[in-house]
Image (tube, rainbow, N blue to C red; front, side, top):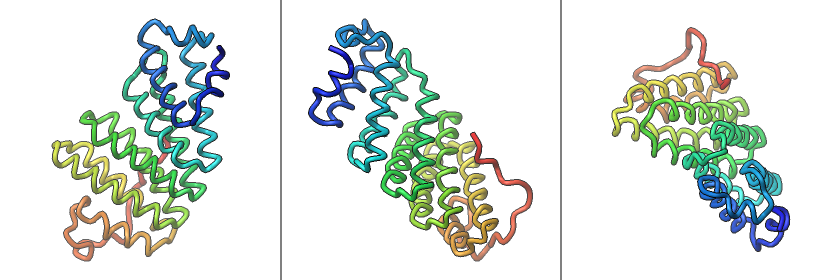
Length: 231
């Protein structure tokens, strides 16, 4: 049986994603028995089929399958199976996030944003947390440039939950990084002359930034250079 035949025999894409995910996580760490049955030589071949299903679900608007696909991508990243480059998978998640923001796809946008938040809440090390925060920053920045209020509100809701996690776990470095990201986003709103959006950002993030009331310490102009959104 070939991997293509195996794909065709599965009844649902969600079921297929689950089985391929198990294959990638479990078989890549053992003797690759299932891979041999399917005439597959490397885990990359199976991973390509997995990614193809995710791509189809995104472009076809199959939101249920796409949500499970994103969740499964994070499961694979967190499992760190042999033969899989987790950095490439995170870059792929980043790619999907940018597409969703640029295409005003709020469902996919929310799916990715909430999964990033969920994974941040599992972490306590600064570097992987900041890597995920950078994706959230770019999601929010694109929403600002497109004057997409709904996207900004989703991002701010995630930022507040993440900030609470940082406070509870005394992750001061990450809290400072988050504050800088929010200031950068406010700067982007000001630069784009989206004054109403800027006011929303300040009001909704005042607690994170340390302003009990936004009116007490308004930010009207920023000096210096905002952090780059490039990875």
